Image 1 (tube, rainbow, N blue to C red):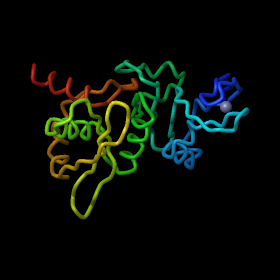
Image 2: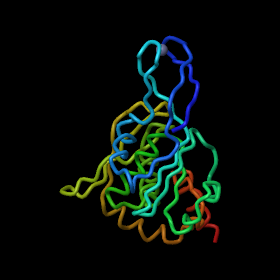
Image 3: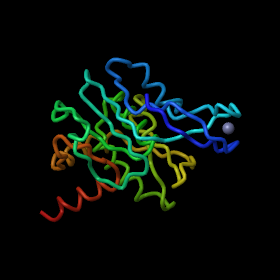
Length: 207
Ligand SMILES: [Zn+2]
């Protein structure tokens, strides 16, 4: 836990809050729920007792499944050297950098569904090109086994839900081949998002 003096957005009083900068999901698997339900980022003001949310830096590690996710709110970085965490074993981990809690939740959901986030970002690129709205973000929501489709939530830049779109599971299968040419640096937390997928396609077209 880490103490921080934060100003409540409701009553404007300052209060000391306990933030969680590190989660080990291998040891405490139930804490995944705290991320998925946003309770990890929800604080109660000691003065007025109202709740508010604060997004803060967070490192999520699962030493059993060998992955680690780094959340840096609104980061513009494309990657972060895993050495900054002081952990040696990260070279063999799946390392991802995310800039929002929605991005973090999506990474966890994808792992639970056994889906490759690099392929998912490519699927999103294809779906985005077909959407009429500009400046929307897509987040993986669910995998519908019977219909053989993948479902995505469409959000605007302020994270308001606009609706949902789906793609055929077949598209995912096809794109699995495409990502084999995409490189992710070992030992680096990489921000695998739509911009990343777009850049990878451009790089492979240049070769
Ligand atoms: Zn308050």
